Length: 345
Image (cartoon, rainbow, N blue to C red; front, side, top):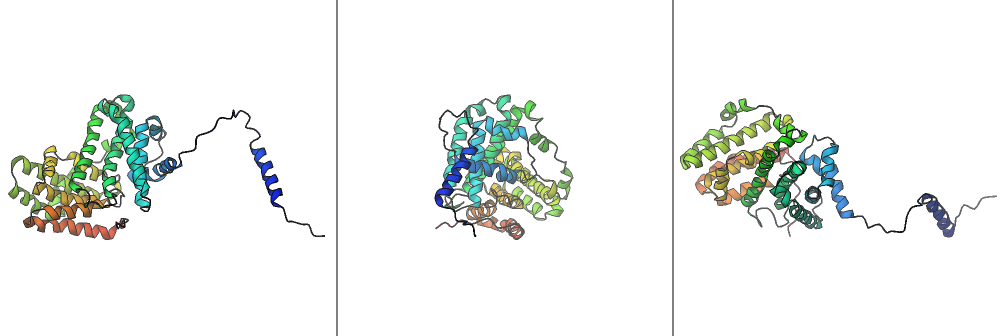
């Protein structure tokens, strides 16, 4: 006789109920209080931050219990992490515009909560403030880059860059205020322990024949403090470019791209704010430095936007000097994956 293997839906329900009762058998202390719904949208961003975004900033980072616990102690740092994670996720999923709103909301929450601690940095908050400043300087580049209206169309790239530059320079100020505490942190030790590449400076003229040409252009077109500021910024730029190209494996991510605006003079940044021709010309070459690391998601849209904007406002007699960064960026475009393009229709 064949056994009837058919089981009725009612039997399924009965069996499943028994399984559930067995699972819940040991839950004896529940007093009937309801549990708030999980914030799944924020948990999605937390997952992105922990498994992807942090490694896009420091690819060689290893789990650090103390550092990874900071966002759970300081809400402003958590909001900052989630804001950047939302932009990162949007860079991967541009069909989800709600991620931009979530990024803005978290960043606004971070700013409102962090203000008193930035004004008066204490030892307790020093490492969290440093993390906040670092993330926010990246956010300041990523947010305009992924504006659906297009970088360079709805926003002035030079203004957006200057905003990011000033945020980055703020990190240096924070470091100095809490140096006695921060100098022992691993993330800071990595920067302190960078190799000395100064010998490369003597090779710049030979490695980059355009460098002495551009140097002469600056000397011919500006004087005194303006000339010195531009010449110093230009030397730093080619120096950092040489480090990236000759010691690529030793360079932690886009660190020198971020260091350049911190290391140039305040006078040079003022020249940029005034749209000085020589400072704009130097900025066009900075676009090439950015492209060396612009497989990094928050940088990838910037080089072409900078070059296009500078070309549109630069004195036409200087346009010939944009050929080198344009060709350099083109060569690197062929070496790196292309960024995801948004459909702005």
